[in-house]
Length: 97
Ligand SMILES: [Zn+2]
Image 1 (cartoon, rainbow, N blue to C red):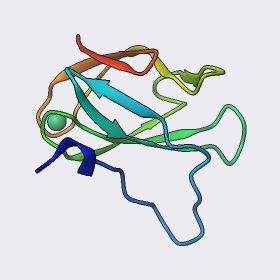
Image 2: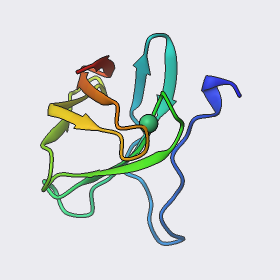
Image 3: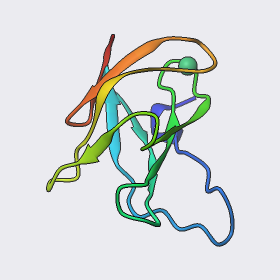
Image 4: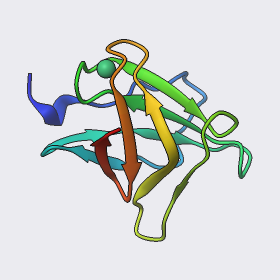
């Protein structure tokens, strides 16, 4: 499987992602989807770069933001529900946390 194939699925026919932030982890690129129907109440559909499983991060659980260059940051570390790896995300760069 190539890293470029990592992309989060749409959550429904009516749902349109606001943006598709690109994150990188040790040279692996993954495209996440940002849904934000109400400003400040967004949800991120994530793809784990280690196990390629999908996840969900909501603004209510972890605060995140996208800067004016489209780079995504999450204010605190998060964990993949499947492989339980902990990541930090700063300016679109995923790091082990
Ligand atoms: Zn994982």
